[in-house]
Image 1: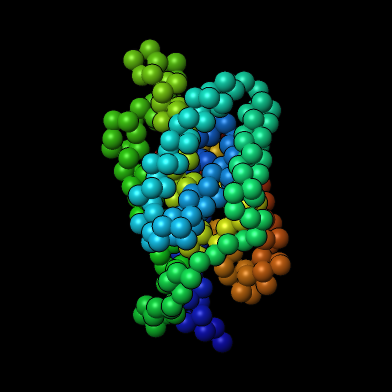
Image 2: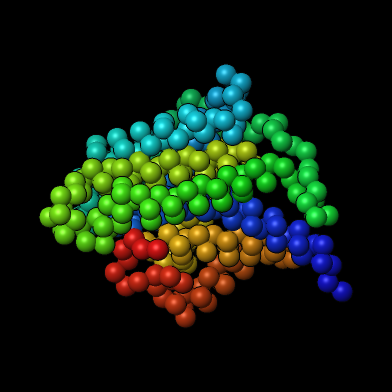
Length: 293
């Protein structure tokens, strides 16, 4: 007999995990949609956000959620500068150049984390108590992490669809030459886009750190998940990344419960492979792989 309480608990946990996956994948989807650059440094940027939160908590005593006041501008500045100094030079070049460049940046970030912090996974005692929602027991830290994800995702959609800067980002993605001809500074928009993608990664790092902890190479796992999310959702589709994050978060939670954590990823990747056989461009993807809804 199916235990409805267990099903609802798993569904709730899966949705909260999906909120974190939204944060860790949408920045990567945004950057690819505008610049067609697969940002391998994305995993390191996620960890950077987590380490900023960790340092502020341990050294200054700042609440992890309040640390976002520092994480957001800091990560935007890092991404904006990285685009101007490094990534802009490989935009429009062969994919291999951007892959090698961003992978090199990932290695630099990981080495920096090892030197400044440690090689161990770090966690903090934060929101360790549980909470009951409609008789469903949830971890308060997971509620906080997932809640941050859904709130920030809503803000991102509003920013891209309603603000003039968001519309300029979409225009640069869909028709870069036409956008420049209409007076849009495409290099500046690309730098802003990379900055926004980096701050999303940083927020994702904070959210992930609150629930699971971080390590110098922990971003590699999240990079893989983010890549799977944007491929499943459709390369360049922000809406697709959101839907795919929900599917993967829920599917992973159920698979870990019923098949065990060591089989969950295998089952998940097999399921994704089946979907891509039917929808080669992903759930919401288009052949041109440009940023869309």
